Length: 638
Image 1 (cartoon, one colour):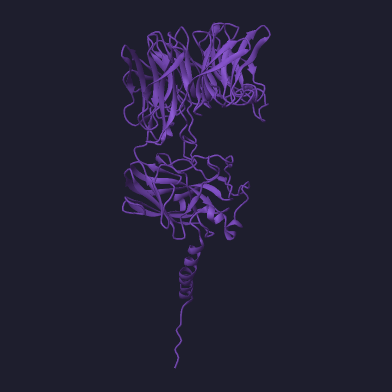
Image 2 (cartoon, helix red, strand yellow):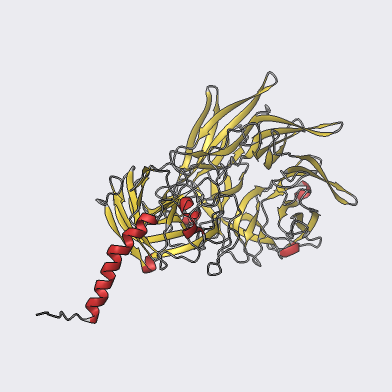
């Protein structure tokens, strides 16, 4: 006698899914390799990978250049592309395209039973993270399991699954293996970590059921893979950590005053430094605002108030826009550099140098506009394209640098000389990118009539140089005075700037280095002095906290140095600290002090040149923050 067991359609569906999970998934897991490069070598996976130069139609972000590392996208200011604002640990850039060793990077599976764990070398409360993944073309991550633990693969500090609106994705590029590189952000994480705790990923889901690979970058984190053990670390950022930095918006304390808050309208926005005339009036350039292309402004004191007068609004395109800082030349004429000019530089504008002066007719108010004149337009890439950082000598000649122009397009130093027929340009020196340096950032006119400058690349250590240019019978001759230290991180640059010279001929300046302790840029103030025909280097001050950059430098009449320091990421930054520092010259060396420090977690994105008046008051700008988040002009009275 036989019996028939009746089952419902729902039971049959569940049974079929259970059989599929038990029978099919283990087989797939056995055939899915642990790394993306291994998968790309197997016919069943290689056939589904895109041509490396083909960007997917459903993702709109432009690809990165081949052979370049990319930093993970992070929300900045008002241009929020990802729901992460306060990154407190960044484990290096995305390297899914190529690294400097020649496309040897890989990525590690975070589904099909594989899990990958990385250490977090910071402490704080975790609220979200961004990961760089290699995906098969067309795939989008819809959910992802995460855990936080005191040990690899642990979950004693928190765990969960991110899905739905808590998972967002941004396309970065396609790499040489045909994978799409994407930054996947997950929010809704919860847990407090200490330095050396672990973040683990697994069970990443894409609708196609393909493998998902986590990009490696050899960052400082330790890393482990569940099947293979120790592996290189991966590309990720972790957000949360601490109270979000606040921009200063009101009058702080101890002699620090905001004398103008830019609105981004007629007065401009995003200013870049100030210059001061003998009457104590300030002049500067704002890179945005006005008609949308920037302005040049004057700030002057009237009674107990400060008044801003917009002198000129740029029209954009060939007529110029986004001006850098301005300098005051002979007869009170302002000089500066801007975008625009001739459209001869790979289809783009080559840049121009302009002057500004009062109208020839008498002005009966304090808010009269000035007349702008483009005194020189750069002619092409091998000219000093996008030249700027202007200085003037006593004869009225102008000098500046181009980071990418010159005969070899490795940078150039140029001179502009006034004449009856207009201004004549001369390329004084074109860098080769070798031991002489490349990408110049700064130039000054020395007491001896020669030029001194700095370059961010090249030199004996490939970290940039401090150089001298001297006139000779055959032109100008370059002498390298000091080779800056080697660049120790693949996307770091030394960015030397703010050169000044004292009456004895000593040179001072600032540059930045990559601090592996904080995984952030920090600054250095240095001095170069000539002794027995050689130049001797001395470090006067080194940044000693996360993102502790030195942003500008000026010398007072007593020979002391003043500057601004701190985090520079504006209102959306991760490091909230800011201060004004002083280096005082004494018989026993240089003494460092901070006459003003912002109290609390306050960002201080100081920008451009500083100015000192006859009473010793210090002036400068921030390119962000202020009442309207468009930047400020500030005063510090010691």
